[in-house]
Image (cartoon, rainbow, N blue to C red; front, side, top):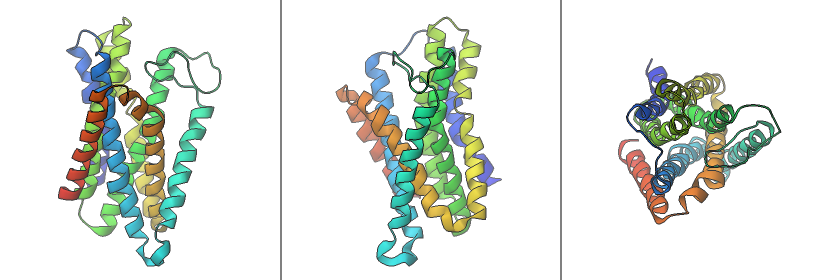
Length: 252
């Protein structure tokens, strides 16, 4: 049950962020949006390094000097996987004027949800794998830190999804529902990843690195360039990284 509740934390963060649509009456300013994006990017980079890649290498210590190999291979497979999804699934990033992926007749709102959903898949898997690793090694503090960190970075993400719908004239209730829905994929893939890791423990290092690669691809292809448009965004990115690193080292 610990794993189940832990996997729900990122989804709770998305839902709480989306719930802010009931209190905010207008869209966030560009500077604040970039700061929130930068903070989320910093958390994701730190989580990828300290909670996924380094533990993946430690898990392969029996390989000696080649202990990095499963992590390196898994990392690049994760990057390639996200690049593939970006090409085959139509989606629309917020503040983007043109959709990516194949041409489609889907509504803009649907493609916006798909864009966030794509990014939430590796995040959910990462949390599920962290709890699977905790079950093997004993002690769930590190997994809880990762789940909490991703949950915190999902707060602005849920809000960023819900607010444009509200600004476009959609009701608060429906805007909240769509914002929360964008994070529903995380517990699903988190549980699937945890179950897969339980059946294939030898593949756990590669699977963790896979999630790290996918998350890094999202950060450096989409989030970091947006954050870098302002000093506030860059400062928030560094702050998010430092905070997540400190939490992982202090509590993990």
